[in-house]
Image 1: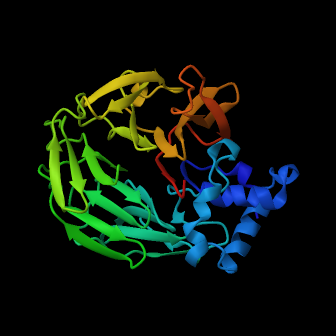
Image 2: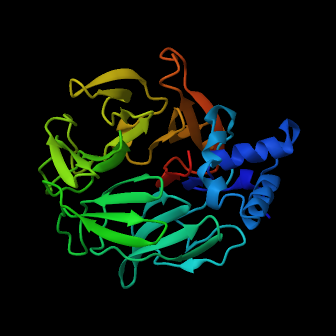
Length: 350
């Protein structure tokens, strides 16, 4: 097995933080530099059904990003084939953008085959790739978010480029897509997330020029959408990335693509407040090539840097709720020879 420290990956997927931390405890502090042992122990735990059934419900109790060295396992979604180490790959078309979504113990990769839009699924428990059940209306450039075993995909474009307002809910336990009520407005290049038990969509564009500043809230119990005016006042231009947002402890944060700062959403006043500068520039590429994620009680920023050692990708971490407003971003990991552009990123199990 190759040393994972040398992985030249631009599209990064981390193993669940809780799994890695449990492996740390199994090996002890002195062995925490050996990725191969982590992976072997993880496979053994899976083989013995450690993370299935009742134990799976309690696995997150070990999750603490402050103890976690990131990138214990990575895949490259931009190579000729989708593959994980020692797995039989699934061939795919070489061209076309890809989107990823972690839900339950599955990683879904949305892309395009020669026959059209497709979804590939990697199952952490079986360690295998397989085609995923297609959506009722295949799409790209959509908003998405996951909570536990379910995920919601909203809006986007169909194969003909039509902007959609339809929404689908995916249940990873049964592998089923369910069409749920439409949003109020069609939108693409928007972002989705769960907060306070509800699903939200913000930003995006409804056409080539019409930027949307409103957000929408979906109540899973009443199956209704509520429009929130000026929830994303900056809007999203057609050249910008979708809003870079992350939720920590039911608080919404955004990385501003224009001003290179982190903002926090004030739910009561429907306003955004500046919290601190980003550790990397987002304005140089209109927000593209940068990952802004949540894991546990921390915000993660994954972005590229050009320096004396060449092009590297850095993982920065910061705890917004820990009284660390003045604290600097902590660099948790560095990937050398990885370019400066993060094409895709999904965090699982935090």
